[in-house]
Length: 49
Length: 235
Image (cartoon, rainbow over all chains, first blue to last red; front, side, top):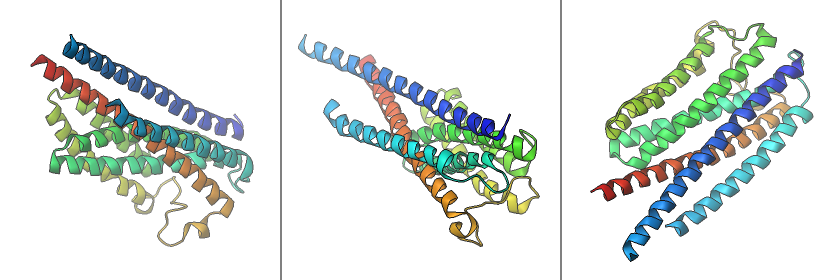
């Protein structure tokens, strides 16, 4: 592997891993936000129903 | 409740956008503008990732240290949440630092890994904070888990000065610090174009770090809220 190969490998792994982590974090964020919204909706329907 | 979180969500969005712009500028600068190093050639460009990654990891562990200390003192959940969120990101950036270093080591030292003092202590740092995260999931009682993790978070931070000083205290393959040296200012030691690249890259990493930290912290906050509400409902 040439010098640019090592550079490409390092940059590719770093930004690839960060992108995967960000995507997983966004999914965790969305899942928690949806669960909270569901709990909100259930509480509201219990209060009014 | 939703309206309270709207400004925070907007701030997170702005931070994320700023991080993206800074990173894009940084990558262009690192790969296309800065000339190659006189001795190492093109492969030295890995430094523009390597140094910001480890400095970001250090910052993260400093926040773990502060959050852990505050939690043990005041017993407030938000301090534990900050420490927990920062530890997760610290592990991410330490792992990336080790991977970048390994890729840089192969063409410059001829090996992917060596049991050099600085490398070994950095691997120990990664193990300590991976242990911190594992400990939290192994202890069922949340308060006990938070207290035990806080102790690890504080003790683990002591490894950072050791890592920094390791290149002075032991004969190492790893080079001494180029930027944070006690005898010279950074601009006396590094070419201005390289220093500019490092600064831009570091700013990008910092913005990205605070964006990810705010997102991770909010996930923890929401999970805590869900748990509390379920407990209240169960009563």
